[in-house]
Image (cartoon, rainbow, N blue to C red):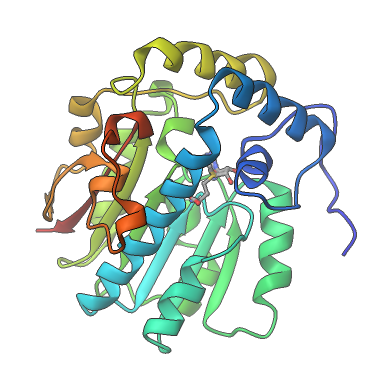
Length: 265
Ligand code: SAM
């Protein structure tokens, strides 16, 4: 397909740099150059992104096992292997998914991927505007908000700065969800590798329009207010319900992102 409009080819973009780390091909030279600079600084970055994607997969499976059949995936990114609807619909074919992203490349490729799937849609919206997301025609068509939903905020909230008040944003989503809904978060923290965290965040600040805000465990924990964290709580990515030996790591702090799944009370 042709590239979507409104793309600044001179500036790297978080969604496309992430796609590059994951080995995808929906990225441009400017994204690859930034990804390579970041990898030179921090060679484990692709491994970290893969572990993030593996957490996403395990969290979806967990929610399906709890009986969840509706997913609202915020900051869903450029489709790559193991998208939420693929994982969920393989495990439970009646699962319905709404993806949300602001990035035109992510939205255009998602739209193409979802053609012919009447149980999954993509909304182009800014997640910092919960009403725009929750009142979108796609949410109305796919999701019944009177029934539990899994709200996925995976590798998203570190792109929402404190000025946007992420706690308040999450509260507005939470209040729209039925009890028994789930919230899955993965969030970059400055606690695992404080030596590299600043330098890495600096790259996003200087070169992209989506600077990163690394947060402490305590701050990330606050995002689960009104949700009860399921076992094993808020942990480094490989520690959250690993299913295969390859997902376990002796040094989980090096993955520098904390993850958790909470159930709405
Ligand atoms: N959730 C996917 C995953 O974990 O594999 C993709 C994560 S990717 C690192 C972060 C995504 O969040 C990007 O696609 C970016 O465009 C999107 N994003 C960042 N800020 C956003 C905002 N305010 N509203 C909607 N999407 C946003």
